[in-house]
Length: 234
Image (tube, rainbow, N blue to C red; front, side, top):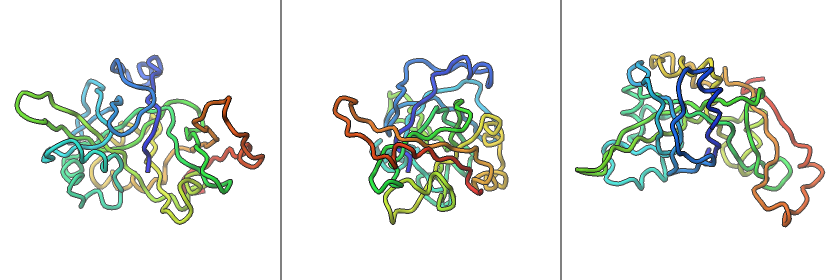
C-alpha cells in the first residue's frame, strides 16, 4: 500500500511538460485525507484544468467521508468488481496524481527502515488512479477524491523489499510523463495492458528515516548502502 507521498511543486516542469498550471495551496507531504494535484479524464476526455483532489476515493453513494480511510489504494486485479471503484472504472474516470516520490517501509536489513522511492531521472512522475465526485449534502461544495492503483510487486527488485515479511508485495502503478495521456484516454482494453506494470519506469529506493537527526540512531552498515533500483520485470 502507498499511504505517503510528496506532491510535486515543480511548477516550471509541469508547465513545460504538460502545458498546465499547478493549483495553489496544497501540502508537500501527503497522507490519506490530504489534497494533491491530479490530472483527470472521463470517457477519454481530459479536463483542461489540473485540480486538487482528496487522497482516498469517496464514492458518489457514500453516506460520509469515512470510507476514504479504506479507499486510498485500489487493487488493479479487482478494480472492476469492487463497489467503491467499479463505477469510476466503468466510466473511465482515470486520474494521474503528480508526485516527486513516495515512501514505504523496507525490510531488506531485517528492520523496518523508511525508504524514499522515486524514478531514476529524479523528475516528477505520476501514479495512475481513479477519481470521483461526492457531495456531503445540500448546500455543500463538491469534493473531488482519488485512489492510487496498485499491482502485485513480487517480481519487482525494489518494491518486493517493502512491507513486512509475509505481507503481499504491492506497488503503485508509476507512470512516466510520456504515459500520462496514454493512461487518461485509455480504453478499458488499453487500461488493462497498462495495469500489468510491464512498462513502469525504473524506480530507485534509498533510506529516508523520518526522525530528528539529533536523536537518530546510526543506520547499520548494511542499511546505509541500500540503494536499490529496478523495473517490474528485469
